[in-house]
Image 1 (cartoon, rainbow, N blue to C red):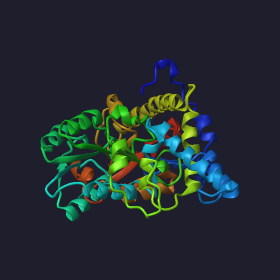
Image 2 (image 1 turned 180 degrees about the horizontal axis):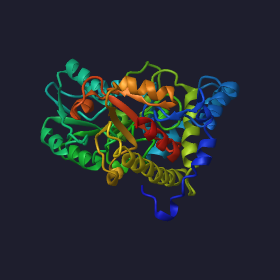
Image 3 (image 1 turned 30 degrees about the vertical axis):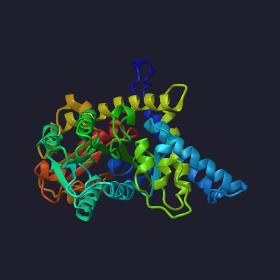
Amino acid sequence: MTASASSVPALDVVRVREQFSALSRRVGAAPARFFDGAGGSQVPDVVIDAMTDYLRHHNANAGGEFATSRETGEVLERAHQAIADLLGVRDEQVAFGANMTTLNFALTRALARTLSPGDEIVVTALDHEGNVSPWLLAAADFGLVVRTAAVHPDGTLDVDSLEELIGSRTKVVAFTLASNVLGSTPDAARVAATAHAAGALAWVDAVHMAPHRRLDVAALGVDVLLCSPYKFFGPHAGVAVLRQDLAETLPADRVRPADETPAGHRFETGTLNHEALAGVIAAVDYLAGLGVGAARGERITSAFAAIRAYEEQLSARFLSGLAGLDRVRLYGLTDPARVGERTPTFLLRVEGETPEQTCDRLGRQGFFTWHGDLYAPGAIKAVGLDEAGGVRVSFLHYNTVEEVDDLLSALG
């Protein structure tokens, strides 16, 4: 789905920030600047209100013949539909879980039970471990082979290398839509098409991409997609979307009385986090409220066009400012003209400081950043860093130009 120029509203950042009470926090005399979005976003007040309203007025288990139970059932239905609208799928393809990694461990093992010893999985060195370690463990248990595609020194995926690894026994190509440490975005359509040409599944981690781009599963051409609402302004939870036939046929571990329909819900074991799902609905509606259009999906498309345009402005400003800081080295794509090929997430090192020291210094000044390998050791190694990793700075659409300029001053 794409938004026409006429359907792209300007992002009113002042109005956006008014909806997030968390953004008013201070660290001593300094305002808090939340540059930790790649680790988890803040949530708008409507999400908090939706979660507390559920617990105050509707709390029950689903399936009962009384008011609060029926209301809980409605929350579950609306949550599945909200994610369906967000990702461009049917609600029966959606599965909720504790988090992306937990869901992926369940799904990878379900698929592995349908494979034969010697079958192959291709992963990439760009990925978060949430889409690597589950395959490695499944391979060890089921006699599978895992091959790893390389990353260029500029932090972009070597798609030629990936394609060379795909063969007649390749069953899955697992890759990320965006690096959670470097921000680079592989050509997902090309990777998915290559996987399908070999008869393999395209299995994607969309966790980092979800707050930055409109995710349309059909347009991407992928078979399994996983993401995390707490990265797109919702509560802590996990989401998986499966191709319809996979949702219906993959062996799901369930208690015997559990219903086998709708298909995707087969992977929702036990009682879901109902209050979190109430928050998921509110998060999707928050995003839709940033756009224009009649249907919610149309508003979401419009909203992400506005978000992307604004975040690319922040990225270009940050990259241009970094170019004048001799003591700061940026890893990955550094050209401001290539902001369309990345998310607003950056990995850097400051001369004379360890990443931990830099984050500590910035944190005491009210700048919230992360350090380490960020659960993506392959990407860290690919750009030439040691185990200490780097400093990750990540923007979301509630960050301001003034905050970016303040950070540049602090880094300098």
